[in-house]
Image (tube, rainbow, N blue to C red; front, side, top):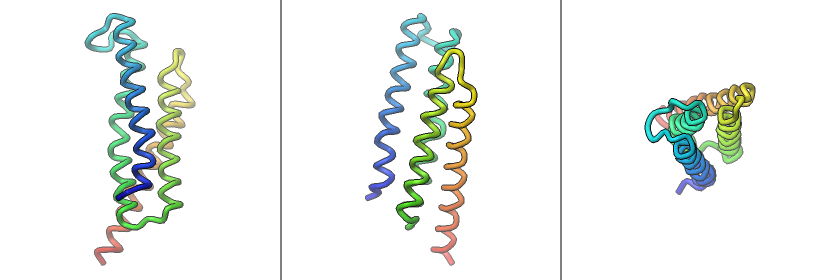
Length: 130
């Protein structure tokens, strides 16, 4: 069982559903069943798409860190960083006009979490192998 990863995966799953629902609503409202020709459909689709691109790897790394013994406090720092990053990114890119500093902050937090979790997973793996 990976309770810390599950703790962060649950709200991220709800956010994924909310972002997907936003895309569906925008497609209906602007009559865009395919593609992203309308700028607001594009914003909703990219917020959802970016989330879908980043979160699976981040959760996998969090799970690997948890399974390999990273301390709970460090797991929570990574989890909170990921939640905040995805939240800021979605708020920044989803608005018209865009709040670019929120988008950049969200991307920076997410990439920092992935980088640190990747390094931690590598360190834990090397320690177990050596």
